[in-house]
Length: 140
Image (cartoon, rainbow, N blue to C red; front, side, top):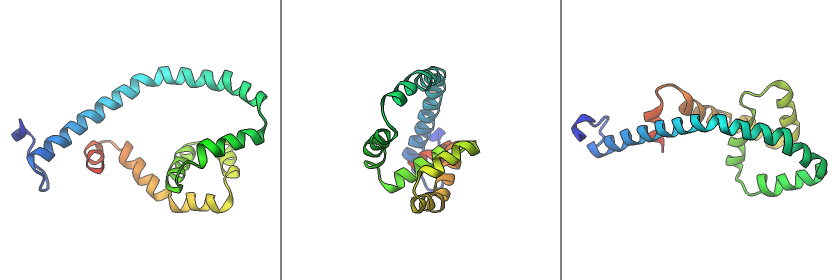
């Protein structure tokens, strides 16, 4: 079976086989995510439609900000926050962008938008381009 996956660019047969197994695993993961999507969207829609109004009526904006800082912002590194921020703004409309834009302090916003945009775009391109399975496996 190893002969069926000849090494490429100096790879050993074992490395080629490992890459092939990684591609298969990525495809299985993609199918599992596709199967989860309809169930997850129903859950998230319900959460936004039912739970968030209760939360909004139960705590102040300052309390929400403190929770967000304590559990979402402070435990993460700058690169992690920057990549997450890039993901959040990727594809949102102008009104949503304005909310995110106005929430982040000016210097941090500059760092995120200028310092991590290229890195995020490269990672997103690698993640989503057709035929990028092998490169994903090599990158991991």
